[in-house]
Amino acid sequence: MLGGGQLGRYALMAARTMGFRTMVLEPDPEAPAGVVADEHLVADYDDPEALARLAATCSVVTTEFENPSAEAMATLARSVRVAPSSTTVGIAQDRGLEKEFLSSVGVPVGPFARVDAEVFGVGVDDPVPFDRDDCLPGILKTTRGGYDGKGQRSVDDVDGLWHAWRALNGAPCVLERRLSLVTEVSVIVARTAEGSVVTYPVAENRHVDGILDVSVVPARVDEVLADRAVGLAMTVADALGYVGVLAVEMFIVDGDDGPELLVNEIAPRPHNSGHWTLDGSRTDQFTQQVRAICGLALGDTAMTAGGVAMVNLLGDLWDGGEPDWSAVLAEPRAHLHLYGKRTARPGRKMGHLTVVDDDSGAAEVIARRLRETVSRG
Image (tube, rainbow, N blue to C red; front, side, top):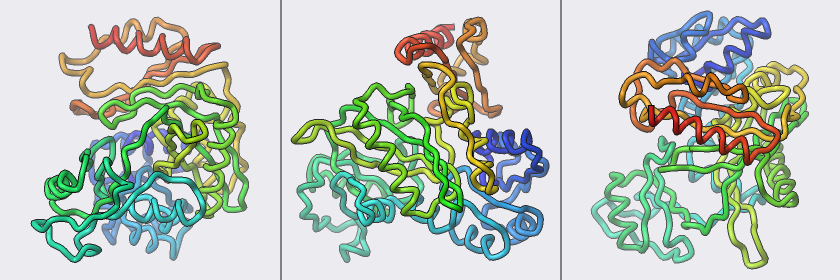
């Protein structure tokens, strides 16, 4: 496993339950995934000796986030199975390549344009020669490295674009039009190398300050839109020749003829909006990841209840010390997951809380209430 965060932690726990031995490459010696791995290589993701150790020891290598070098993954792929592919990871870790790929395979996306000194032939102190009015007002995002709202600036006009680009140090960026959102949804899809595909029910997501706050499943959207979302996710997975678990995030926006779907971005790994599967699906997304990358039969994705809601637990809750979880643990419909991170910071994902109920709306009410009792405590 390249990466040592909570997504890697759950995937390695699933692998160990299935009888696999595990190894994680992660420079942080206290990373959550390193604690549960059989062996933790404390080194950079492109460290030659660590990569050689992975290649010599492992039967399959995967990743839990987009940041590992695509070149390092390509090097590994010469001697060991790597899934997803380095090409896919390379696309997902560059917003410009990602948008261009999605457009090239016929997937609908919002208006976008590259903002790049090399493209424009200008320096960071020069005005941006920009004439794409269809992308304004918009959100300027760095093509690499940003997540959970980081590396982004809201802009209203060309002058604002120039100032925002300077604030981002002239880094290669993508400008995406600010859309009139009805809601945000995501689809988790799993695919094997042989082309077998399964999908999970559509999740309805709400973000606060660019960070996922709540996921509700099944999404409370029109059935036709939900079917369309699943179809788009499968189209993306097939176009990539994808192997593993893939999250496809989408916007539902107001169109001329009613609500329509636009794909926002892809995540080549299990995803925060799929955490509900740990408690509300017959096969959770992490077990599914292990099955898919190891060439095993994919599991049943059916829900085990009528509705599920997941709320993120951010470091802000730890502001006064360790939170009091007594109310959460006393609720039989609730499931508490803490990631074992030693340091809590505002905005850092420290855990999540899932509520399983007959109705997704009721599950969301309970989940929010329980989190509020923690914050008040």
